[in-house]
Amino acid sequence: MDLKKFVDLHLHTLASDGTFTATEVVQRAKALGLSAIAITDHDSVEALEEARTCGAKEDIEIISGIELSAYSDKSEIHILGYFLDDKNKRFLKKLEELRTARKERIHRIVEKLRKLKIDITAEEVFEQAQDAAAGRPHVAQVLVKKKVVPNIKEAFKKFLGDGKPACADKEKLTPREAITLLKDVGGVPVLAHPAFLYQDELIPKLVVEGLMGIEAYHSEQNARLSEKYVALAKEQNLLITGGSDCHGHGKDRILIGTVKLPYEFLELVRKAHLQLS
Ligand code: AMP
Ligand code: ZN
Ligand code: FE
Ligand code: FE
Image (tube, rainbow, N blue to C red):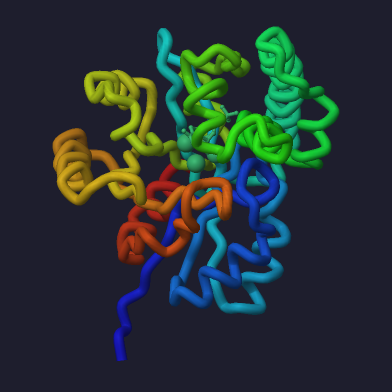
């Protein structure tokens, strides 16, 4: 019997822009033979309770997590947080503010689309997002439903992607603010998908600001890139994490389980968390 244990540390649910409930994510993790998963929704920890309930039933360890967006100059940086206290009142209030800012941004995105003569309302996007942290993927889903574009990918390519005509900025947290927000609640801050940042020179600066790890393994990059970021992590004395960044049907394919990180990596993150508090 294979006793090796694996984890997936980057998963989205319906609490942000994933299309699976927390229960579905946990059940899929179980079916794939994972031992632990981290739920890392954008600006939300709302799925964690349901994930824990299902995790207890299915014998899957649930790691509390989140994915925050920060800006450095023009680039958007995603910072994951692990083992954070998702009951902390101040933290929850800040997340609520970020989600309110996301809603305000939806109005700006919709306005831009309407100027491009696309018939869409903010209400339609909120209907699509329900209680989730509303984002561009929800706008994309509405555009697909209305047959403005054939698929989500095309919606980003034509309208919503960074620098495209209907893209709008989110609330601007600095990387230092995001990192501090996480560490204040025991969260271990990790740079998400560094390969998509295209600015490796930023990493040492983020380390000075308190970054503790990088997501060297990600489903949408090749093995050579993973090796590069593993080497970079070692050089900078950073933790190494990895995850699929599964959004359910929100991406071309279902990604959960396409990254299987050995459990030992998670133990090191846990150790770092314990040293924080
Ligand atoms: P937002 O949080 O509103 O800025 O939206 C960012 C999210 O959109 C990311 O987390 C991705 O899940 C998704 N996304 C970004 N680019 C694309 C793309 N080209 N195709 C599909 N989804 C994308
Ligand atoms: Zn997302
Ligand atoms: Fe991300
Ligand atoms: Fe993500």
